[in-house]
Image (cartoon, rainbow, N blue to C red; front, side):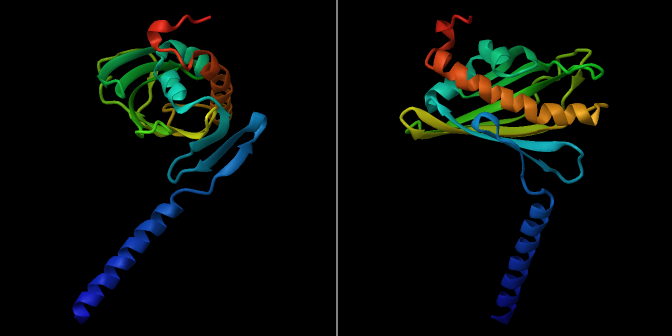
Length: 218
């Protein structure tokens, strides 16, 4: 019996150390902007100079409209600043696909590109949806003169607040690879996601209820 108690105590101690170690690997979120009721945070990640960001907002719209908007690649250049060349390179299902896109990086840095695995999960009531994003293994055949992103992960989360309002959380980390000036990284990390949310506020009302076949992009 004593041996069993000892084993249990050792297991609890080991689990505590794992949790403690993980909590120490990431710093607390720091508020960087609350412009236009969009709250932007960053935090340091252990063993990297790149910050992780988190954006939170409440906007008019619905969860289905938000998901529909995110599926429409024709709208990506309107939705996400400095991105182009979007295309699906492999589709598992409507809610799981691999896409390629290019990031237009200001001089003196070279443009980046990457392939991303997107998985959409939606609850039965359509009151909550989450889009997990990570680097895809389907794009090795794509050869360009751009710098390929190899390490990124994050998510979008949409939650119904009322019949005409949703809460949004977008959290992401990406290693830009290569040599990129620190001032440029810090500028893009917060500014671009804020612009995306500002764009989403307008686009979700205009295009969110339409499927890709119905779209007429202005």
